[in-house]
Length: 403
Ligand SMILES: Nc1ncnc2c1ncn2[C@@H]1O[C@H](COP(=O)(O)OP(=O)(O)OP(=O)(O)O)[C@@H](O)[C@H]1O
Ligand SMILES: [Mg+2]
Image (cartoon, rainbow, N blue to C red; front, top):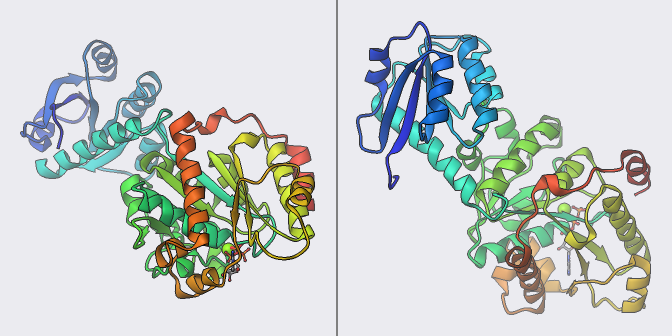
């Protein structure tokens, strides 16, 4: 699994004997114990001097010393993965371990094979997270359209499928948590939804999250919205933040479909996003709302060069010229998606048009949109979430009410 053995330093807390821990540790070539240290202070000194890929902390049960070693290590050596082996897990201990920064937990006794698997998984996950992109994260594109029915879901489905068809790892997220229909639009069965994840026991990691994603024929995976509106209240902003962070670390692209307006979930998605895809349609009301949406993003401190403006049903004969569009919205359009009965049909059939009719004009527009986002990553990388300036809350609330 790994080219070089993983160098693990083992810190033994008072109350656990070395023989018990040695018996649980794998004897295979993948893991090499570089030292067994008794006590927190000694572990500190050794950590500073010894090249180490992994810290294993072994204890018999609840231990403040173990917690403080985890906290200190997570601060001083943020890249070092930490696994805790413990003979018991009294109430609250597990939660505290993960809060302090532990990566995983194994309850002893456990077979060396299982322990080996956990240790290798933790190290591999950290290495993978460190290897993606310049900032260690993939792109997250939030598809917005302040007015209902502008084509957000259709665009999310096609953009995701086009990116996946280009060989990227992609997750499409349905953030219309009450009335989401992305699964329907992409033709996947909602076997597992975000409601199931929200109600699952234990902490969240990349592997667990992956098991709640539904595969799509394009190669993308879909994180499906709850199937009933009353389940939406279980999808908290805290859960979503964690999900976005994990998905960005483990994928090239995360594409998020949203509900109309600036709900707390949508604001959390904008905060976590690297790019925005703003949709407008060719009527004055929709264009006015699109402009208000762009102004809201501006007030949230979102850099306008990270926003792509897409006009859907762009060839409708409604007496509004290109110049009118630029004047009302206040900026240039990047992509136009034509109005096409084939799009309506593909949505009804649950097959994105980029797969159903790849040569159609509409499919070409969605591929153009995907290429634009891929070119951005190649040109300037992916901005980290923290690079965005602070929002301007009071004015933001004012505008969010108006849109
Ligand atoms: N370019 C297009 N040509 C023809 N039909 C389209 C086009 N774009 C979207 N549609 C149709 O318009 C309807 C609304 O599209 P969609 O569901 O993607 O919008 P939405 O913004 O997600 O809506 P909501 O705000 O309700 O979630 C769908 O039935 C879809 O088939
Ligand atoms: Mg929708």
